[in-house]
Amino acid sequence: MKPKSKPLCRLGYLGLGLLLSAFILYLLFLRPTPIKVGGFTSFTDENTMIFEVINDGFADVELLDVRVNDGRKPAKAELGVSYSLHLVGGEGLDEDPDIEFVDIREVPLKPELVPDEKRAALDQGSRIPLNYGIRLYNDEPITRIEVIYKYWGITFTREMPMGRFFNNG
Image (tube, rainbow, N blue to C red):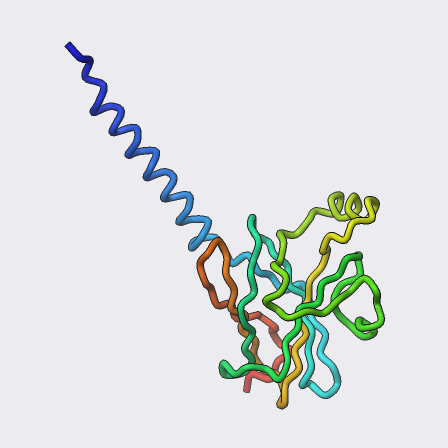
């Protein structure tokens, strides 16, 4: 006679499947968005803005699009990639050899490194992206920003919380 372990084995597989499904559900939907804003620079004309983006997740984030105000495309959107500890913000970025601006879809945002990993990358002299920022040019003042991105193959839209610095009236 065969032992009656088949129902117990099926129950074990079912439990493992439910546990794995709950974990994936948490990572993809219940966990806060992996994109964080570290800070931003607004220029005097208010039609140009740079904001630092941080990937606080576990996997790469692929930027798909950036919209301003009421879902309109900005005149120009660029991703700034810094290969040094210089944040992508402020002025003089185009003159910095360790910062390059590319199309927002060109480079995925890698998960943020801890300070020790950043120092090790700098000591090795390798060109590992350490900081990211998005530079927006627009024809009218920017009052709201939305970033559309892909994380683990799923597309999300995130409104960037710029707080009291925007005219929301």
